[in-house]
Image 1: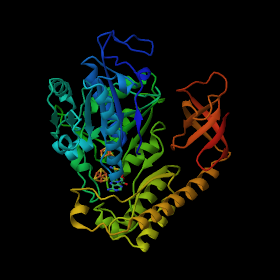
Image 2: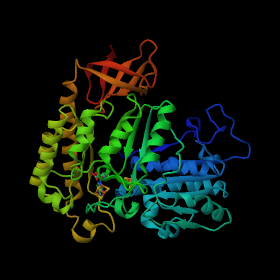
Image 3: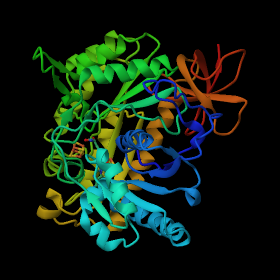
Image 4: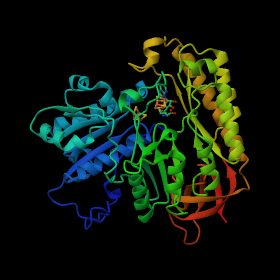
Length: 474
Ligand code: SAH
Ligand code: SF4
Ligand code: F3S
């Protein structure tokens, strides 16, 4: 789920709660407004956080710009998940530093997981960075900006047990106006031995159910047709109403969101195999608008490696989960994350990962080779002993395996008709639309009649290339 994007001013979507301040592409930005430029890296949660930051900055009269050189404030929302992610950030900082050299008044701020991981070390290592802010400290940004304007480099990386930014209405950036993320929880209480997230995001906490419903309703009113509920481990969502003491779990939350409108689709990510319940599967089965798609990262197919990874399930247990999903929701698409070359991984372990991918018949996988992260359990306890070339070769085999599975799955859809939500023009041609079915399959099809972005259409699959499904509106 690694992606990189810069935001666009003309995609600024208004926050209706700020009555009388509806902004569109045509809106003149006030002459006294300040401009910020932001790039986000890492997972969807980070992209979602950037929208919270944009909202906080909006209160300070900062508007987003695409032009780095003209910005008063340059921000980068960072990821620490693998070493490569951090190297990317360092490279981007050299570019920002160049801008700052030409225009010293520009402030450069580092947000997110790498800020949290490195804390004040960041200020020591990157002399041109003015502000360092961790994921739970964004409310402090206006103060930090003021301090930095006064010439003092500044930092807040305090983690919180409560912060969920529940009351902040995110400013949608780079939006297609149809699909959106909604953050439902923060942090992670699992301790997967390879993973840096518990250190960068802190303890798990769930967001107020009413604020989630209000955000989803608001999006639907503005024309959005799909929301993805986000958390590192959504199945452990649990919110207690402080007044009634009533507890809402994830399955109940899904059903509540699904009741907003039959035309509002719901997706969610990520499910941890140990926590997904039958109740969640029944919610998917029984509600047409809860999508038939579960992202259920396996990480490895070997029980021995899973134990070292501290995933708390083993191979037979994971297979049973897959069986259970197929039993309750026969046409459910399942996707995964896979790590190649974790500490002590043998060829046999690797083969077990490949055979697990076949067993689960993943529609897609996010695939990585293991990257040791400072401070994690694996870094402290195990030797990163699989040579890089072996990791890379195994990853290549995993990628190849997924290609084969996807290709076979894609071919099997030819002739079938799916309900597809139109998300926008296809990448290649403005004569074609792209959209997804409930199972997250991306389909490209020629425009027809008055259908427009945000409409649902029935699309029959006519052919499949290795990555794209082609179809026609029927
Ligand atoms: N909360 C999610 C995962 C978040 S991180 C879950 O539990 O599934 C996204 C993915 O990055 C992980 O699923 C894992 O496959 C990968 N990842 C995490 N740490 C990694 C590391 N040190 N090296 C390589 N891949 C890693
Ligand atoms: Fe990391 Fe595991 Fe938490 Fe996912 S569940 S964020 S992999 S510690
Ligand atoms: Fe990266 Fe932080 Fe997400 S480490 S994957 S941005 S939670």
